[in-house]
Length: 345
View (cartoon, helix red, strand yellow):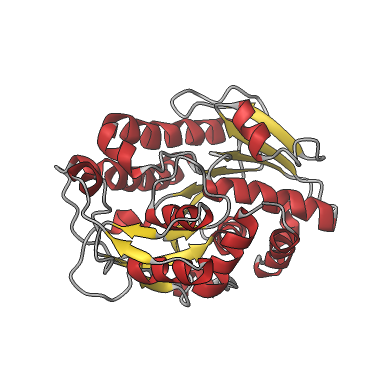
């Protein structure tokens, strides 16, 4: 994916992160470093080292080194790149005093939410508890927890959610394993802040897409570009009327770094580009248009329907994020073009 445009976009995104020089000479642990969002964070930090000589030590925490080595094949020899073996359900096996921890390790496959609801809950909640315990012991400056827009639940209006607005969540639906454990994890963050003074901030990404998508990611925003890249028409299993806040992954990364460095501890921030709030169908049509394919419709299986996001509207406001200095660069068309361009490599 390391096209000239992708590298240029990583460099350009630095200007959207206020106080970025605070990261100089720091040690940053990133869990879930092989995932769509966090792998791009690793790319972003290593690019800062190249452009600014920032001497940031980036620690990629993941279970499988071979997977990380494959993903960062051109980066593993970079100054600043490090690997730490990590299992969300186990305490971190390291004595390094990290300055910052970005915790993004989480099951991101909706079909597994249905097949493994217990594992989904435990990995989300216990995984964060292990991070917060480590931060308490090692006096980490700040933890950033990557939560989800699914914490908001369902509401009837089409107005976007702000950070203090919550709708209905059917906690007896096994599919709620994901949003329920994300909700509980957010409360755990503020509990550790109050009781142990562990500094943390929370981000709630909308629907993130981009060339860093993984092979196992079955979410629509990753499946649509995969179809186009494989020379297939996009097959939709619903009318696609659900409203979503889509955000290109590099915009998401600059937003995360903005919150890490400028966000207030104990608070949550939506990640949403106001120029990219569209329906699932509109996203599919944009990928099809740019990729020269068609959108066709099919009937979903019961298993597919069971994994669907429980929210008809998961559009998010971006006012709070913008108030601390962030702005997005990628509207929907530009993000779709960038995804297909980099992923073709």
